[in-house]
Image (cartoon, rainbow, N blue to C red; front, side, top):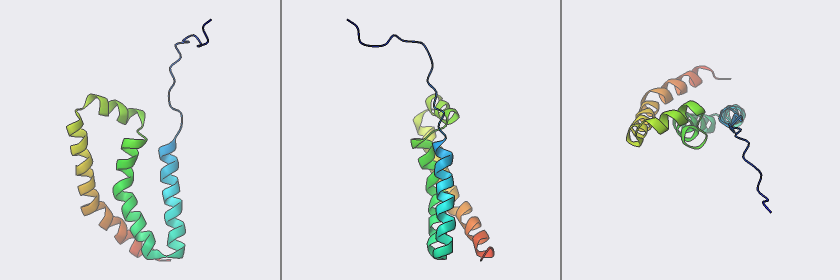
Length: 105
């Protein structure tokens, strides 16, 4: 007696949008933090700019990123990741923090 179901050959693709939910939660948390403590909100936004795309890429990769990571050698993926981290720390964070200084409530 076989208790396992037969294979239906139906590809199971991920339909969730957890990455977008994560970004939305970070934006909402930053806005709420801005209302309570502006200096904490600046630090939270800076850490989200630097770390969130890297975490999103490795833990919740979209199908295009998953296909790219399977075709490109791992060394180049890490090189791209560390390049983004360096760019975010030197360029993106100062620009966004400068914009947040001009948008004081």
